Length: 377
Image (cartoon, rainbow, N blue to C red; front, side, top):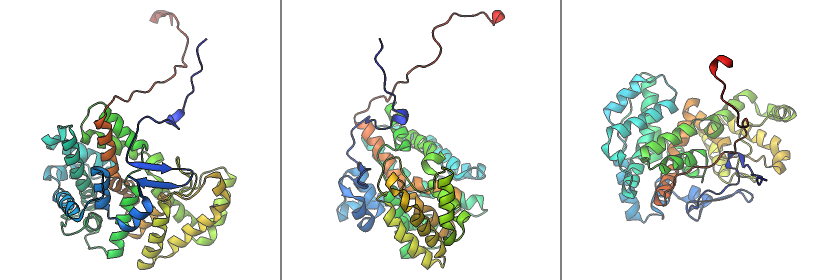
């Protein structure tokens, strides 16, 4: 008798590798990057420091951060040939355009084909710097404007807002974008990071792995939550309608967007840092009602928290982007900006002890049968 095989659909609960990067405790609702609490990092660190922590292994000294940041800023510009590609496919979805551009960068840079540790570090830093430029350039071109040249005097987050909007952001707005990137920087073996590791497992280059990650993130089940939350907020309209909205959703056994997580049973530890940011930015932009609607939904969802339906990080992100006047189809590309260092380090870890990732499927098709000639079928 054949021993029963346990199927873990979606690889749920399966450990496929060791990692020294993210420590996630879903039951307690905690997250650490290389031993540092996400709360400390979101409160005290810059995105550049977190990139160094993830990619190089430790928080940088002042001198190390200066060198790292200077190198990253030097890579922000993209070749004119890539801008021409953007002009050619300007009407495409931003995630499709971004993925196409990363493929183009691979084709235009001979160094992209190298696969050693040094090459992955170098190309990872370049791509982390270039992704915001690609997204902002596409947004400008599709709206009939010339792309805004990167400003190397600005931080990664401030420069992103500068290139996107053509105006220097306030200190608070830049810091909130910075925190958003920090919170999204790394999250273990999520779908896109796992997909990138599968690609590296074949001994492919980093650009190819990032294209895989972008393709995976583009799926709404992975990267689409922030956009869906904003659609929900607009549908609710006013805070006083939130309770009825939630009641109707639960009665119909439909999910309330922004609640629940594949890993966390408690509240997503990243969410609290976005919550306060939404409140402050809403006041700065003269639109506090968005925050009020969100909090009314949170209040209406409290009875369901015992079932693990707690607020997640993407619940607040969409409103932040909305307050900046950012189109909804850019929400997932913004996620990609923050996740770049996480993808890079996941690829680096895979490469350091590389093995082809090749799981099994249990066959449940027809029993063996005889061939039937086509004239007898």
